[in-house]
Length: 445
Image (cartoon, rainbow, N blue to C red):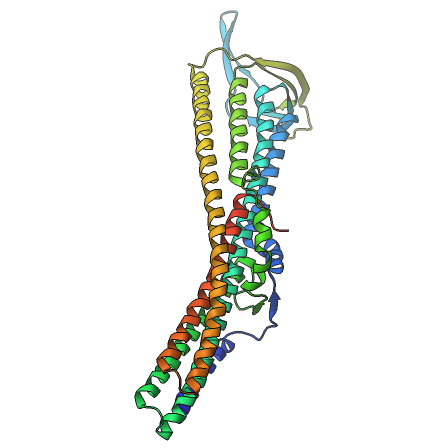
């Protein structure tokens, strides 16, 4: 037993010290649920991407607003006649060849235009406002999803840590009993079979404990990824699942599953419906006339000398005007486009009805899971107390020879199952509540 114990201690030490050879020593970050959410909201790439998307849509809105401003363009042109135009005229019966034009031509100009009546542009500007609303709501949806994931990852760590505590207590009990049985076996009080069973029990408990340690590490990695932390940052998660038991019933009483107006899926759906309505208005505006003002100014110089400042003819020109465009017939394409949008609007209404029914069903399902978990918590809590009491009694009875090792082993197994079931029922409640809060659009305080 001493050799086995030394070997187990050595293996455990190697597992614990192995990461130290590839990572730098860092201060341990103590994390509560509120702290984890705070860090995730500021460091998570998901939130940063959502914020960038809002900025992009804002620039897109400003791009459309620029259509209301005048557009000004400058131009310049140079041309050289390699062969001038020629014409033949007759003077007194003698044909004479005349050349027309000059060798060099320089032209510079400015042009400006300003929309005065532009129904399609005005309707597009209204659509960009809905684009911004959708981007903001999409960002809120990303935050709600991240809050849900951080909550559940935090609860998962508490579950693995509490399960580890159950296995650790079981291991300690098995280890102490194995030491006692080993001494009795050497004294010839117990059989070799009983010592072998105790040894196997210790090995099984050690295996469970190692698996629980691995589960704790992996669950912490998941939380660190969601928080946007480096995976080698050491964190210590505060609390136990039992800490949430005292306020469960008051939380359930405050849940209002009818308050779905903040559900992000429904809100986004309503915004998309408004976008489609505005798209229909844009299509209608395509049948309306447009009016635009324009102004042009040009300055030209022509001459044969390569030097533009000597013996050149120079003259400016300018003009202003209005352009009225009245759509009359385009083959019916606008009408058919209008009918397509109308059909899309009808489809969207049916889709919203189906979405609303599914959300109502989810709300009922989450609430049923919460109620079921509460009943399980109450029953499993009482079962855990009974299992602890039974284990203590079995231990004392075994010590005085009134119970067999099999009785003690059964009591130990019952305690492990009771402890795991109790922790799992609390986790199920917290997980269902987190999903319900996400569906209701409730943001963490």
